[in-house]
View 1: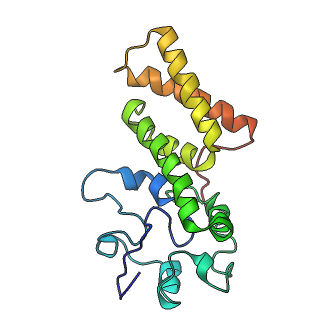
View 2: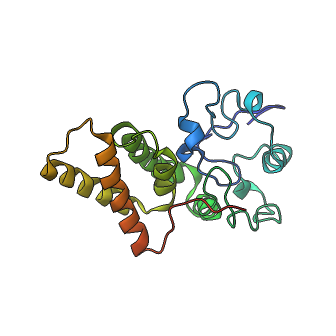
Length: 192
């Protein structure tokens, strides 16, 4: 990141650990589409937040983990409530980046993004984008893979048409919820 309005190398992960690449507004079409944290034209669409401002002032960090004060008071309880995107794994994401490096984190996130893009393309009946975003952010990769596999098998065995997005979405959501319930994960946003 460089300058007053820097552009991050990895806008799919926010400075604070939010999964921008798994956010509904990242997949919105048109002018309200978010480019991710400090992505191209980010500052033309969004006001900066205090965490971005802090990362810029403190050496233009890609994420908070680069700071020797991490975790600080600003993000200490960041994962306790949600906004338009799940905050539940934001601090976990930052600790993964700190322990394994951002490139390794991005590789894992890219796998999640591929699952989400497939869900949005082949299963979204127009009402499930937020649910699929939350599921791909919170569930382990192996659960996402199994839910997709089992959904595909059930759709084929039931003879459901490929363009019947309503039926396909219902099946996939049931499997995602099943895996979430096994892990005591709630696939919905928490209001502040």
